[in-house]
Image (cartoon, rainbow, N blue to C red):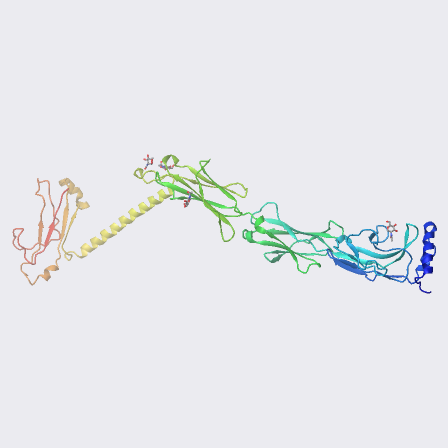
Length: 506
Ligand SMILES: *[C@@H]1O[C@H](CO)[C@@H](O)[C@H](O)[C@H]1NC(C)=O
Ligand SMILES: *[C@@H]1O[C@H](CO)[C@@H](O)[C@H](O)[C@H]1NC(C)=O
Ligand SMILES: *[C@@H]1O[C@H](CO)[C@@H](O)[C@H](O)[C@H]1NC(C)=O
Ligand SMILES: *[C@@H]1O[C@H](CO)[C@@H](O)[C@H](O)[C@H]1NC(C)=O
């Protein structure tokens, strides 16, 4: 068949045909024009990422019948005209505008809903307003890839304490295709989670994802971070959503009240009660003091301090003058933390009874018992030591009879003789033991051997007022010389030794 060529004759035929079309159509025109006409839609499949531009290719060759070339999406019922020469298609532009051959188009800012099969179609006029499909391309399947939105990790509504298990959810949406991988990490270390739930998104061409993980909270988690990593074929690197575990954690304070100085205190002393509120998180805390259940006004609360582990501490002080009427008053430190019920700790002001009334303190019976035990033990020990000392002394005295250095000892009457002395003499009696060193004679032997003498002079400082004041001397240990008596006092010989016993009466 000879190819059709533009000629005045053909133009005239077309004009007459158009005139006929208004009434009866143009029978046989398609059959004539189809010769040599070919439509090429080379793309089978095209993938495009949402937001980018989609290029669709369609070229025709040869002469075709009158009628437009259009782009349709879908076939049959529900098809949609994507582009035709007339009309407005804001996102669609023709690459070669006005060309008879090149029907390539560009769709900018592609959306997930743009996914589908696109057909390049040549129509043939079949009436004044009707048109029939003359030839169609084989269709291009367009898939739109969509990046997931940045993952968002959400935690519980309220805080939970250490040891409690809490669920966290990671969501990302608007992605296509639906294959997606989710990985949870706690401080960079992968943790196990359930399989993500994939649901179709707001448009039926995109998908949403939800993944849940359960974490058992620990006190150390204040500075821990939970991360949700999402991998998708549209992403060159995983997307991350994070959650600071401190936002889900509550660590209750430990409360302690200490009194300085320690109770009991003396009357009129100033006592400082310190309430130590430690190891809590988060930092919102309110400390109040109650005196016998009534709130106190003057309170000194320190600034909030943050410890190295992220926990907080604070201390609150009240000063109280220990007047007698405050004896036994109860001072309560009341701590409200993170809208939780109060933690309370109490101290009782104890005022010691004045010293002259004795040291016993009924409020501390244990101390009293202890001190009693100590006293008894002390007394027993002292007695034992004295007994040992006395025994030792007696043994020494026996061993050194006549050997010991001169000494004098005043003592009460011996117990054995007590009865008789008391009978015979009711007055206070003092006995004196005189003890002379017999060895010392030898030192002075050379001076005067014949006149070795030892001397005991018993003098009473006060002349006895009457006969009842008697002074006894136990001369048991005195070795008396046989030398004739000399008047005393007198100048002593060099070798003589002297012991003077003075008895002073009360
Ligand atoms: C496109 O849809 C219209 C109406 O919905 C229908 O009349 C027409 O035949 C369809 N075209 C094609 C090519 O399927
Ligand atoms: C304590 O102070 C009050 C008032 O200042 C005074 O009357 C009282 O004698 C003081 N008591 C002692 C034991 O000092
Ligand atoms: C609170 O107590 C601290 C420490 O005892 C003290 O240094 C500070 O002056 C006090 N502040 C007030 C307002 O009493
Ligand atoms: C305070 O009370 C304690 C116990 O109730 C009591 O032993 C003590 O003597 C009291 N002190 C005064 C100063 O009354």
